[in-house]
Length: 286
Figure (spheres, rainbow, N blue to C red):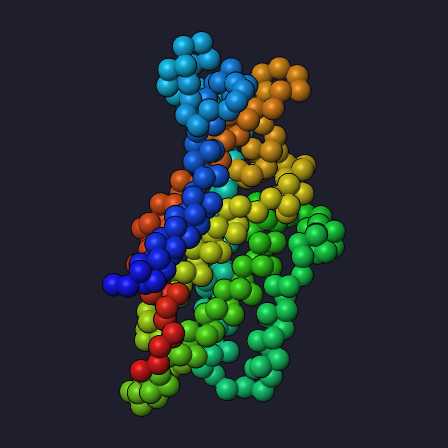
């Protein structure tokens, strides 16, 4: 190996290390802050590990985690987020898979314009539709949870449909033709043959839809303003208050952020093989 190739290899690994540090440091700092007491958080300069303010010894504390799990608003927020995000993801995948099958495999007039209209629906900022959507929700007198699920479908369903359409297009047309020869209806072809083949794509798009619904704040803050019991996790964290007036509970906020991030990390680790398969499907034509 020449000196030039060695230098390129070293430079590549240094760049990779810098990117990993840049991406992981905020998460590490959140964990570090969540394990500190109020006195440790006020230490200057800030320490990279929790240390006792007097002795300087390493002394992590789980006080912030105990406080947030004693907070009924936060615990209820986790349940609300789970229900809303899971319902949104399920509805988006069911409706999106039907729409993607029609757009990807069936021939009908206006198919391409329909695709571009669906894509255009994802380009509107949330704030531009919030006022009108809130008026509609009030007129229909829907509950906060139902309102959030329907509102989240506005940005999860078009994305799911657009992504799944490309996967259905990539499936061989011979599968449909063989099923039709065997007497299968279009629905049977979709449900029994094509849908199982799109499992990697379903997992990938479903996980992205779940993350979007789990982390959403603007709609949740608006629709739960008159129903505090329906607040999701992001809104519940925003309403954290300190033990004394004008105190920012930074340690509790960081602990809550770590807790709500863990389910997403576990989902990604559990479905990582299908996620990779879904992201790479269709990249190479054989």
